[in-house]
Image (cartoon, rainbow, N blue to C red; front, side):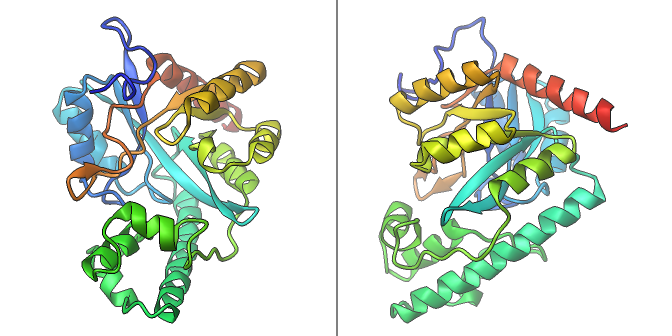
Length: 298
């Protein structure tokens, strides 16, 4: 592991947590138990399961942690999709009520919007002369709840020979500057923050460095974010230092995570689980906030 990958000067006495990972429940390639195993192998104290708009991977991850004798703590989480100023804004929710039916229903509505977006994006690709179909993309996942995202579309494009890599698919077609980028109406990030907090969870802004919009980040901090993802593979060193200053100024929890999505070919996507982390005291702060919120709601 390179020094660049070791976020936050890890020592033998310093427990770490990867607070941003995905599984096959959304657009990752690993089963939940594999994320837990990888976290244990990396020597982590905790790993969060934060799939896009779904909590379906959490029970299996908790079961896997139990089988390992709780060597790794599993933090139940979710990454909520929202839209602001024409681009995706993602808000991470931690210690969310993953068995609450009302919360699950809200997430189901978000996945319906994701499905509509997939249809629009594939239609745009077809207009560009690319022989891609909705059926071809959706065959990549089994089961009734097909939580499909842009990486699945990118995989299909690779198989069709349109692009050579996930990165190329996003750069040319699927990213926010891409030829086929579309975004139907979604909830705002403020609504995502409210959804998470009203459910008793803790709201953290995911990978703020991706948005290239510091004004929006500051607006969301003022609105009521609980934390900000400082250590992420897409945040530059300068951005990390800036987010640390903002977090300290506003009393926010500083989190970090690899945004691990499994492997696309031979390379981990975005980064290998455990290479971007936060100190374990971030977990303790998240748990404390969630506990207070739960008690206030009782």
